[in-house]
Length: 118
Image 1 (cartoon, one colour):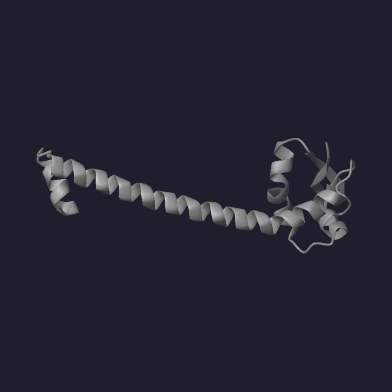
Image 2 (spheres, one colour):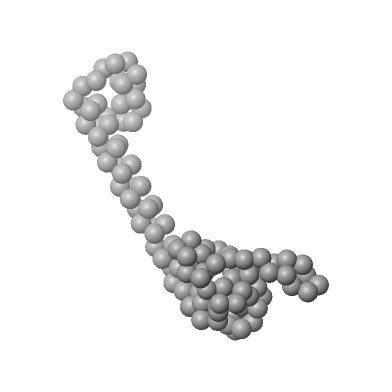
């Protein structure tokens, strides 16, 4: 039974065992495809996390009780990332309370976000 035949049978209200089997096969196929897609997405997330882990550890090693800007953290840690990447890199640590975000005044730059240990 083709997919078109199955859908026409459902539309016409002709639900037979053959139609039910075709629908079940279609659902199984969808489940298998979704599982593969989810597995690939998880692999990509793990890959990206593995790339970010050493950078995160280097940044975490230089964070003290005194708030520092993203630029200062990058310079002290000796890593090559953009300052705009620091918030997303430290998001999990901020959410679990390991690190706190505060606004600090920087001469000639105004107020910037600072990061310190909680």
